[in-house]
Picture 1 (cartoon, rainbow, N blue to C red):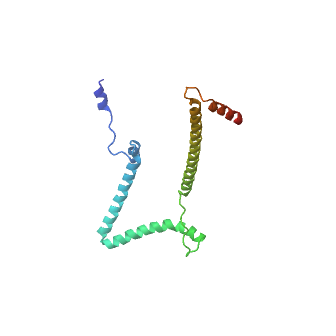
Picture 2 (picture 1 turned 45 degrees about the vertical axis):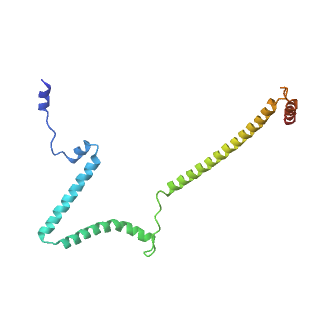
Picture 3 (picture 1 turned 180 degrees about the vertical axis):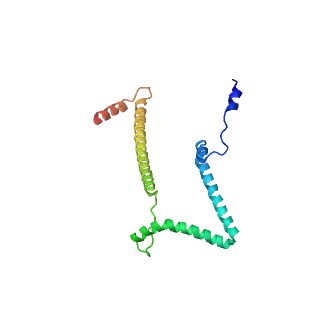
Length: 173
């Protein structure tokens, strides 16, 4: 049997796949699901307002009905939270300010910044001190080399410089 004969006998996937299978076959499943839900709700709303229009309710009444519907949903959601809130504080008292959820992270970040700044300053001080010590050592060494390389008119080393450096070593040691 040839390859094209095998493929022609295969059954095609149905055109109207269910929502679950469409979501499973794509990496954008969440986006597609949201779009489908949004389209379904808009279709329901459109049909609802067409029915209202057919019954002869004018646009002002439709907007009032829509607002009432939204307010009822909002009231139902806030009713449960309002009961618990009323028990905890009096009606006329202002709400306490909301705590910043990122306050802890901000404080930690500021502490880390301050700590890094202090460490950097400490390193700068240490580097400056080592540079000063190094420059002092180099200066002393340069002076000693100058004394040791000093010569008389006849090319002989200056003995007073050599004896003076030996006496300094004895005093230090």
